[in-house]
Length: 470
Image: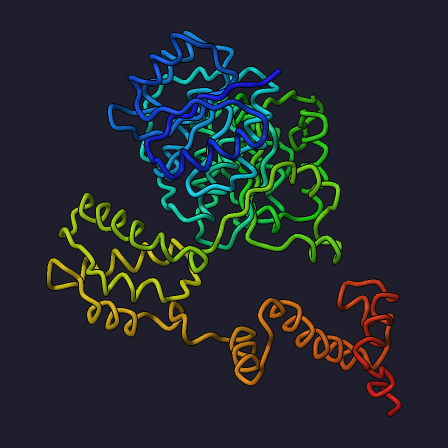
C-alpha cells in the first residue's frame, strides 16, 4: 500500500528535491506552501506523515501544530527549519514532533526518517506548556545543530548523558537545558564539580554523612544524591574523581541506593545522572585511574561539544549576545564592526566560549567608541595577559608548536603523527628514570609491560642504552 506525505514548504527548490526523493522511495507526496493550504488539504485527506517548514508566508509552522495534532493525533510530524537555534529544536520537540531537521540536511537521512515515521504512525506527545525561552546555547553552525538534535533526543527519557568537551565550551549549559526542558524539570537541578572537592570529602558531598562519622562531622549532612532526588544530578569533571569514590558512585548508579558515610541505612534515590568531562577518559582507563565499568555506565548517550575554533561562524552571534549581556549589566552598549568580527573569527580561542565572553566584556568596558573596530580588537588582543595569549603557548604546547613548525604532515594525519612524535621521548624518559628497567618503566608509565616491550620494538628503542651498567 502506497504511503502518503504532506510536504509544507515554501521554498520551491527544496520542496522539489524532497518531493522527488520521496516519490522515488515509493511515497505519494502532496506539496503546499502555506498554513491555509495545509489545513485545506488535511481537511480532505488523511496523510501518513507530514513534513513542515517553520517560517511560512502566513504563519509559524510550529505554533499552528497543536490544532493539526488535535485533528490527526496519529500522524507523525517532521519539522524542517532554517531557524537553526536550540530554541527552535526545543520548540519542535515540545510539540511532540517525530524528528527535527535543521537546514541544510542530509536528504537520504530525511527519507529514512520519513519511512520510520510512517512505520510508527505515532509521534511522541509532550506535556510542556512553557513558552520557548532564550537559552544561552548559541550558534547555527552544523556542529551546534548536532548538539541541539542530541539534546532533543534525551528530553523525554531518563537516559544517562555524558557531555564531552574542552573547558569553556558550555557543558553545564547543556546539562541545564536537558533538565529545564526534560521530564524532570519540576525537580531540583544539583551540580557538583568533582574536581573542586578534596578527595577525603567527596564521598560525604555525594552521599552525605552521619553525625560522628569522622572528625568534624558535628551533625548529619545530606549529600548531593539526596538533594537531587526527583531531579537531575550533574557531575562535572567526572574524570578527576578519585578512584575510591568512583567505586561507590558505580554502586549507587547500579542500585539506585546510597548509604551516608558512617551510616547503616540504605536510602533509595531517584535521580537522573548527567556527567561531564574535559578529559579523554580512555587513557585514564588504561592507566587504572578511571573505572571502565563506570565509564560504560555513564556513557549511555554521549554529547560532544565542539570547541569554538571548530565553529567560527557562530562567533558573530555569540559576540552580539555577550555585548547585550554586558549592556544589561551596566556597561555601555557597544557593537562590533564586520572587520572586528572577522579578526575574532581568526583567533583559536583556547578558552573557548568562556574566553570569548571575557574578551567581549573587556572590549565593552575599554572601547572608546560605540562601534568597536578591528584596530581596537587587535589592540585588546595584544594587551591580553600572557596566560590568555593564544599565540604564545607554553610547556608541551610550545614544544608541539615548535615541532610542527618543521614538519610537512599530510592532512588527516596530524593526530597520529603528533602522538608518535611525543611517544618515543616519553618512553625514553621513563627508561632513563628507571635505569632501563622495563618493569619499573611500565609501572611509571601506567601501562602493561608487554605493551611497553611491543612499543619499544615498534619505535626502535633499545632499552639497554639506558641500563645503569652502561
